[in-house]
Length: 403
Image 1 (cartoon, rainbow, N blue to C red):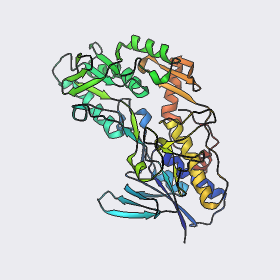
Image 2 (tube, helix red, strand yellow):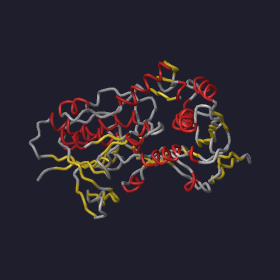
Image 3 (tube, helix red, strand yellow):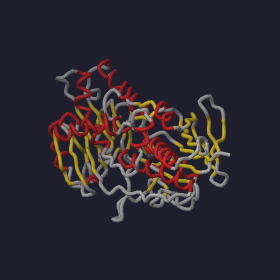
Image 4 (cartoon, rainbow, N blue to C red):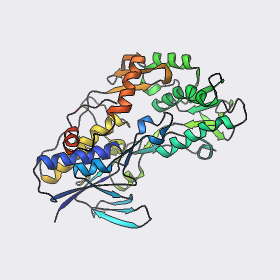
């Protein structure tokens, strides 16, 4: 009977886990059918999540079936609802609502993260987001219809809640994006609301001058040290009592790991990510690995941990795929490491800022950094062409990824 590796999720970590596992099986000279790699997810597509702050997200998906078939990975359409770690199987539901069960010898969990939405009155009913492809598409459709609404200050105002990486990228995109709909001369107002004392607090001091310059150039306002207490169809109310009239409110306030992590057992961090070894095996589990936004993984020996980003998900996927296959075959695993860390923050039409190292030392700003960001988002983060040779070569865990 053949052995089976099941990978849950077709995001960056899931795709690269599948390719990484296929690479090990190919190198070990396994007989055809001796080990089966199965990837299960609701749709056989990769949503280009790092690009969802941009306009026209409708086409920001990458079909996966040709690539998976080329790599020898079997795709199963379904949404996993239950993980039975003791019995080594998962329960899932297909597109028609029919339940089925998949058994596994080894499992890789790569179901990613979702936007955290606290119990703020009106948030779920009235705010938009760019968290998932469906959310970004809904926002894009809303913006495209703004010109049909009666002219008002609220129609021309966008409030972005959250001044982290995503919030900054969204805010810097909005002035030009809204003017493309309302007209070049339209008076567009964009306001970022951030609970911390400064916008971009988690990014540190390095990128801050560029962020400040971009905000000033683009006319983006900020409210730091305050929070949103309610959202309604006409705008937001802040903890200071200030009322901002806006027909477009975009929530970007933090992420949480997939709820499936709760079914695996073992310790999790404050974001719900599973604690994993340097080999990306879930602590306390013999047959389950985790990668991407569901894994709290050390990237070096200096105390740094992977972030919820495609940069870390891609490399973690390669390592997890390698190690799950190696574990099944009795081969030596690799210790996940990603010591070279960069950020490239999109600042709209102003440009971008590119930094290196965990201290985020700026190396490029403005148009030069924007050209790099465009290359990252339009080329580097995309999976390889559906060629077995290219796919397996690209799945080498020692390859460096910048995004």
